[in-house]
Length: 300
Ligand code: GLU
Image 1: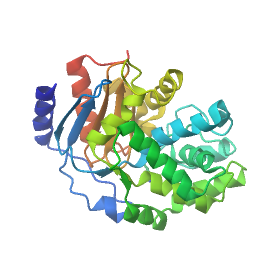
Image 2: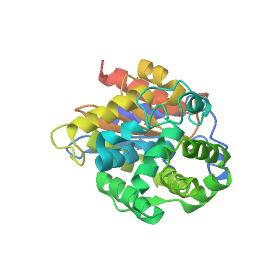
Image 3: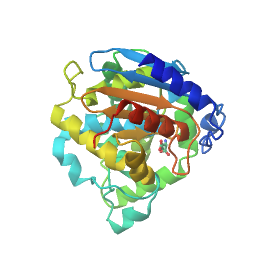
Image 4: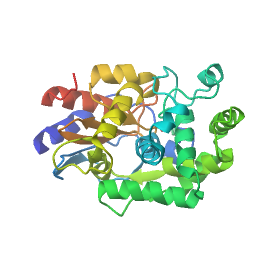
């Protein structure tokens, strides 16, 4: 496995096109483009990694997998009254469907759906308590207490968050927020600003693997369902292409990270900050496609 990862990394380093880093906030826009890392964690806790595997990056929308797990743990199927389970075919921050569908976001992985999910976690809690719960969940999943929020990234998200504020106010106008938009977004921006390395993220994803030895912090049934949503909705309007190329459930973030799951076998984290046109890591996707082919990993 280690050999395969080393080969994969040297192949990636020779790629001519590294995509473009997200530039909607300066903290992400200034990240050096030519970085690549991959880690694989098996259910019994073995960890393989290669490349820039000790460099923390902003997990951004990968956090939506963890908040979905927490919200489902809190309110179960009730969540689906407020958010759907269909791919949107739209960009991560699109507002167009929200009006047509009367304020019920298509799925929990587009921004509007993730804002509703975070609102559910906030019910009966302060933002500080909700964030402590989110960070605690991820630390427990990764079995690592060294996972933190980058406050400067969170502040910058707030300062540049017009689109997310629009989405949150739109949701509120349809009575689909229980807490004030500012409070929900404050929490959402901080959850997006959590930083992890691929080694930490691969370990944190083991609860979705559903195999002997993987942590059961949520039920198997729920892990399966989260994986189904990752497959259909985890890459925004690039979800179909990711399923076609990689054939595994995955969730991307604009920081360039992707968490992918090989059900019953392993959790994989990749990171390369350059994005493709749909806002998903260009080389991260490429590497996952190569790895899946080489290992014969696919849910199909
Ligand atoms: N914080 C980003 C936003 O809400 C997350 C987007 C992403 O990772 O796709 O705009």
